[in-house]
Length: 358
Ligand SMILES: NC(=O)c1ccc[n+]([C@@H]2O[C@H](COP(=O)([O-])OP(=O)(O)OC[C@H]3O[C@@H](n4cnc5c(N)ncnc54)[C@H](OP(=O)(O)O)[C@@H]3O)[C@@H](O)[C@H]2O)c1
Image 1 (cartoon, rainbow, N blue to C red):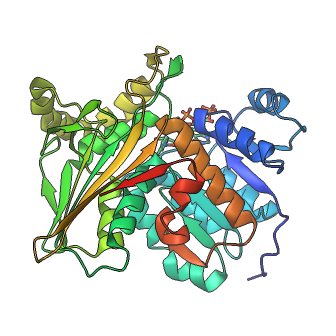
Image 2: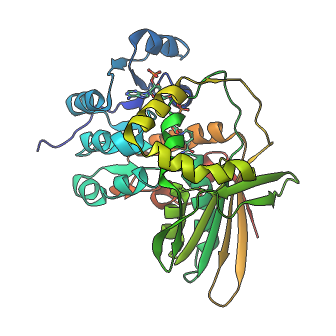
């Protein structure tokens, strides 16, 4: 294998998307000229026109084509915002080996373990891979890591991912895949150190937030679960998300929807239809996004903590940018990590969040 020397470039895959555009703009504001990668030259150039300096664009219309371009051109850092991480992240991350670094925004229990499974390859090749570099999973992982600092292994951890997000007028886009994946995976929790099935939408609750607002959340198979388990070592871990519908009638339908969407043809149809579903612009429903964790030790003592951020999408773009900048400075350790495992819980503060710890 030829040793990767890298061309120093930071590539943003999916640069025409909501997060891709935001990351490209943030990178440009921080003095680096991102390379915009996407499926359509005209739309990439339009994004580029909004940046201070005219960026290079790379046109590639599928994950395999993107991987070929990475292998050929050897960017230093690849920020993957194209979604469908379970299906494509491994191909793209592997193309960064040896020596190139990779960051994505996966938040599900298929893609994240798959990427973390590349640990030995990344470590041997001097590459750093970071998965979950967004509100999910960092907002909760960072709180768990903070609460567990210098403490023995807890017995139980509960995390709640409570994003508040403004919607842009447009279409559902890449989020359609994540949504269908949540429905088909069903609920999950850790019990006695093992990942076990639960009902999707279990543990529904209404939480009082530190800013006086309230939010409803319910169980989902999200990457937060895995990150919280790894950050704490606790044998028992549960997760809820504010993105799961909490109305009883809808929650009752979730398992049936999951079964239906497991049929490959129905899954493809649903993703195709949902991806082009129009979405109206709307302000974010609550002032802040919150990551929340309650950690309980075997002696019964318990600590609670929060991470406050503003819009969940803005925070996500800030996290992905901060990780990309650190990786481009060579600050990552070789291997594959979730974000707080790679850079410590204060990464969330560098991305604009603040801790409220009990
Ligand atoms: N972890 C978190 O907290 C977090 C937060 C926000 C978002 N996310 C995830 O991040 C991803 C991006 O979100 P977003 O809101 O920016 O989505 P988006 O607006 O739909 O943008 C997706 C981008 O990826 C491109 N793309 C989609 N499929 C592709 C393919 N097969 N090959 C090449 N390019 C492809 C799209 O290109 P076109 O413009 O050509 O369609 C677009 O540029 C989603 O998976 C979302 O679930 C995670």
